Image (tube, rainbow, N blue to C red):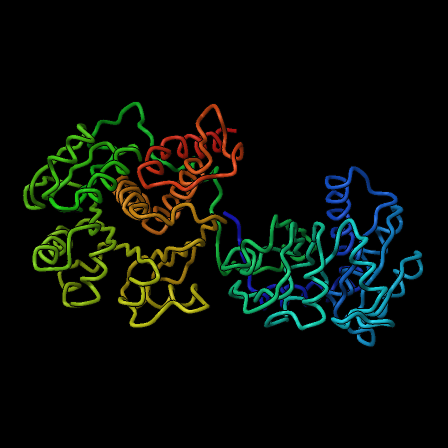
Length: 507
């Protein structure tokens, strides 16, 4: 599991580091790492390093200092370096001196002979002729969009960008963007990932995030957020053991769909089957349609007749009237873990007395999208989706999975997992039904609900990517650009997604 730390946590760790290691030494470590990754980008994009050109976009403070020192290291490798100073009087003195000692140039962004946008001729030339640009405009203390001059310089960049710590213009805590911002190909960050690398627009604008340990690893507290890795998901994903039977592997009940709209029932039940459940019991009015698609499912007409299960997946397509309310109440009274999605969330929002049917010691998972979250919480998630998810998880004493391009999974005790898919392929009708079935199957296998949601979200996003890119076991993702998909295609790709995470665990 990878950690994600807030800027305040990182700064506090750095202050403890500075007590034993001089700050300039730490800065040079960071800058050297930036120079190494910039050289790699140069080599990949141009075929060489020496003789190439790099432009530094330099703001005030230490972030600009990192860029200037990185420029000095690149000069020693024969790279032509020009620093474009957005605030010349506030440029990091030692970094600027180091760049000039190695033969690098520094020009003001608004120097002589400005063009119609106010950019100086030398600054415009540096950006136009660069093979790679290093973004050192603002650091972790920055807030809000780029100012006009910086935004204009960034607008003119047509080559790969290496960002120092974070893409400038991205909020470091929420990952949101309120105006012009840098779009980086690579972000070199220090100590650990920050929220802006995995949340909101920042997760995309950060590009490939390279984490560099500058000596703070031993000073870091518990992370604010966590990211699951494919190998640990694959190692924990339930597969049959030699002594297993269909009951010991977990029996999941699915209460979804209707006679008029059976699709949710088919998708949720199919996902539970594909997730390697020992047995799937479907209960509802779409029983005949479910049996036709998935003959291995034991299907009955009502939850009262479903038989014994280890967990329930309930909600998609059950309706928000009296019959849907009765189904949800029956499932909650079963004393089994419940994944409640879609119509179940609307029912909870309309009638909080439904919570009275729940045994407080039995876990419940809620999986809203933003609109359902607003019904449940009484307000939109807002920019700080992590804080919003934490608050609602604690309020209802439930694991809350807030859907989105970046999925937030909050436990009632405050722990948060983030699944950053960096694509929107699952944003299609019915894909949430697939996720519900996956979570239900993992709950039935006995996996902790918080982790079950994280595992399911990762496999769900991976399956969507495989389906969108036409990938199979013989043709991996990345071979194609990607095309729109339906939930059925996503569901069909679930076994390949599970195979990939299992393979990651074995290699």
